[in-house]
Length: 240
Image (cartoon, rainbow, N blue to C red; front, side, top):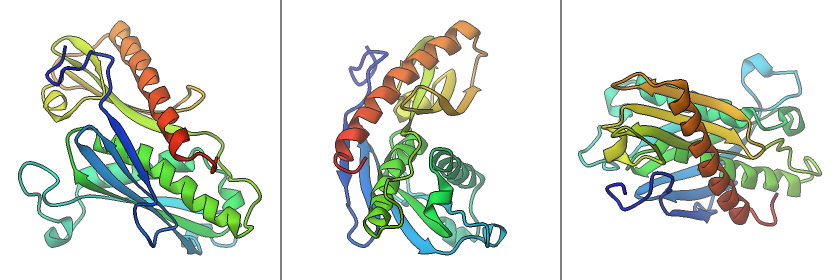
């Protein structure tokens, strides 16, 4: 048993509220345990300069944590005058993950902005952002479909992300903050519904890990991803 009563292969409770924001083409509030992330997808005409005239679309992301999303206040990055390295890393991760499963040519020369705002953080915010963003993206693409931009939503795969790690010598799924902050190994896995990897981020925080432990973490991740994708399918029923 873990501190919150879960087994090593147990996940926290998942709640998805779609179209949480009135004005965004697609949005959802994604909650997993005490982590809550608001994801919004906005469609804009035009693409970055390096893509102009190529007939293809673009998906990009912005990520931020609200000042009191954590136990102590985090100053807004705008007040610091620059975006931190962690924020840049997560924004690029979200954008890469989503672009990897969408047919961008079908979108045409449009940009879809994905905004992820962490309202409450208790571990796994980047994974929650990716999982929730996919839902928001699909809802935005559904709006384009209704405008006859394409006949079928151009999604090649569903994707979700989950954290796994080694805590007190044992492989655990879906780490909360208390576990994440003390883990010997911390890993974030992004996978498709067909079981293929989109991105693997793994770090030995205290002790190196071996192949057997890595395989165990991958198996736990697959279990978690399957659960998350089932939740996504339920939230997107009638859309994809």
